[in-house]
Image (tube, rainbow, N blue to C red; front, side, top):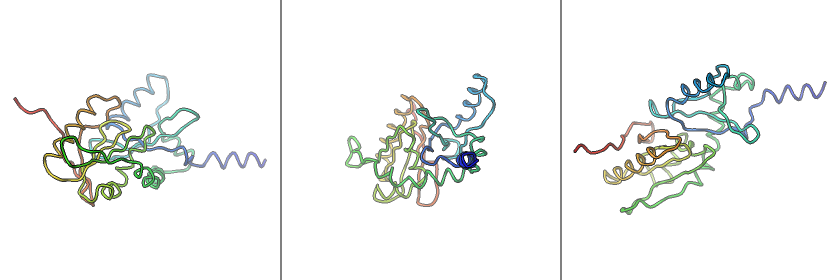
Length: 204
């Protein structure tokens, strides 16, 4: 009887140490639903929220053994949790992971940009704590982009030339893929996210 009560309690607990954030393309939930249907799996929506409007989503994943999968709506029901609680959970880990980001030189410039590469999804924390990104860069406003999953690039607003160089780099990384997220660049002004732009080929 005691073992049954322990098992029931564990079944309703969020596995906090196994939850990961993930920045993904805006069409990911639709493509995931198609994938589940093709594999004979019942509908079960991934738990996601808008990161950058019409550009990228922040979803949540969970490790099961040696595999990582999306957190589903059914998981929240089983854990008795909300998407907001998962958001808060990964946000609390942001500072430690952003501390691992590196400042890289911009080729042909005296400027630097912040690069956070993390194959376990933690590159998404820059979107959750842009204030910490700005602090690492010496102040805002800052430009930020996630061209592919696992990569976050950010730089301080220092002029059109730096923006041009970085936006082109973002576009090239996105186009090479794999696991593309978005070629768009967003700006954090200290209060809100604003769309900044995207590098496009020059008109002949």
